[in-house]
Figure 1: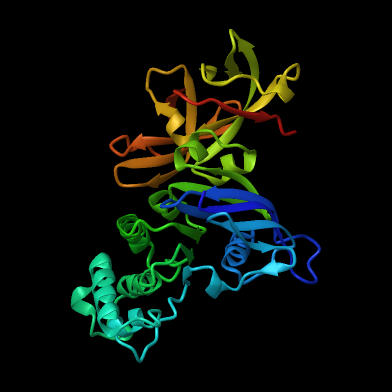
Figure 2 (figure 1 turned 90 degrees about the vertical axis):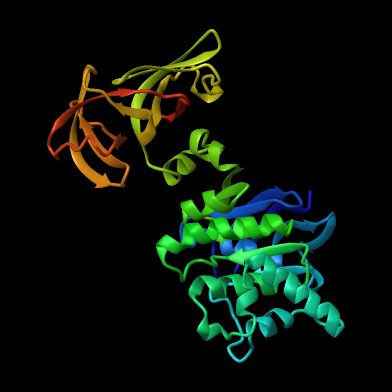
Length: 355
């Protein structure tokens, strides 16, 4: 593993709780990791500890099997061979694009600098802008200059702290995909902080969901969405609701009785803590509910949100439970209308019943 974080705590004076509490994660060389969570959850504090900008109160941070942080030891950032991209890009306004990129190339000959500048300009697609100044560039171009400057010294690890937060929403996801392609082309190892799920899904090979300093799950986007490790991850990632169910295990497979019928998952079993106490809450994503005029179960449309190719409907069952459904946009039903629905669930996710 290239980056290994083991049982790390980060504490600030005057705060009763650690900002980061017992976090462990690993990142392979060439992988892009993302830390995501609500504001104040500790993701930036963890990034700063990995960068060497904050000491750790417990645990270790290792880079290529070299311990760079542990209690009583904090290797300075310049000794960690890291690049950083911040929210405000921190470009020098009086330097051209090429001048900004050259800033981090200390101790190299003029020809080596020129060659490396050309390489990273090509990488980020800004060859034609090399003599322009930051104020002459768009926000997306400025972001790519900041990335090029961070990549120019060939860092072992690139850290990005909410680099798209100042950009328009429409630009963020497109730029996230561009940045992913640039990082992959550079074979860079990177750790990225964001609060935006679409950014995280677009850029990350592996994603960590943090709440109140705790890392709930470190996994790929597919498993975060379909196999969340905690109720918080289930609620935080994607559109979903919980309905009551009764779970049982038949032939080693999970079976759950719900108001929408029986749900089964051959790849899941009843959690050991749930055996004998089979009441549960079942996670239902919007893509688990199918609009079907012939279905026995009817639901009232409470809210609808147009998404272009589809509507996101919020629906209330006769029993009072609420579910959500993605419905093709040519099914344009009115609020208050009752429609038929059925559950079509490939991944049955259950948690202990919350009273």
